[in-house]
Structures are given as C-alpha cells and as structure tokens.
Length: 149
Image (cartoon, rainbow, N blue to C red; front, top):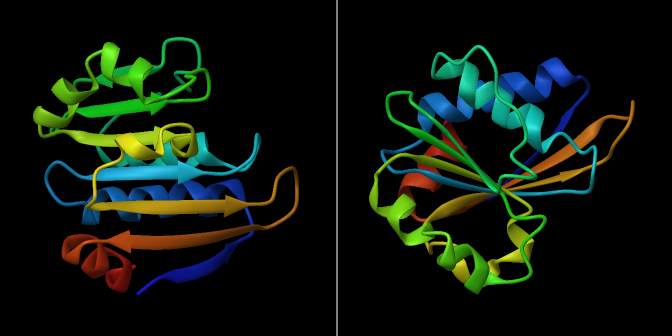
C-alpha cells in the first residue's frame, strides 16, 4: 500500500526521516528519487539524527558515506555513477551484507542493483514550494512501515 503526503517545510522532511529511521527493519534499504533540491539529503539527515548523528552531508563526490551508528548507516549518492557495474566495483554487495541501514539518493541511476525488499521514496518539488512525497513499499516489513507512518 503506497502513501502520498505533502510536506510544507524542511523540518517536516527531516521529521519524516526521523520517523522512517525508527520504523526501518534491521538491514533496511531506502531508495530516494527526486530532482536536485527536492530534499533527499534533508530526509537522510532526519534518519541520521534519529540514530544520534549531529551532522550528515551529501556523499556526492565520495559516492558513499559511512557513519558508525547502531546500526551502521551507509549513505549512498549514485548521481555520479554511470551504471550498476560501478556500484558493484566499489563493494556494494559488502555493504548489503553488513546489515546496516542503507539510504541511496539517485537510486534511479542503478535500478538493477536495488534489493527487492526496500522502501522507495519519490520526492517532487524544490525551492520554497511544498514537497509531494510518495512512499512505495516493497515487502511486508516496508508495507508495515508505511502503514505506521
């Protein structure tokens, strides 16, 4: 069951990230979609804050940022990747095996690498306008997460 919501502020987007973090299953995977400035990193920052991080930044140039939270948080940005092969070459399967939380911005760049069970979040809007956020669960754990939000 998908869910769509409208978020008015950056604080609303960060708050959604916090609520998602608290409901994610062990080894959870969130695939984020949206244009530049849509709020993908802001949502990720909310996840990080829920895990006790004081700061989370976009890993655009490093592709992945690892945070020593419990569980560990792996924040990917696939914007600069040309395909799934590049992602796998950097050890993506090892990250999947580490049972941490994975957030992947620009997931549309590597669709064949995404696990079958995950939460897709599509964010529409940018600038000062409200954001339309669509949550699409894949798998029973993610169906439950979306119904609890």
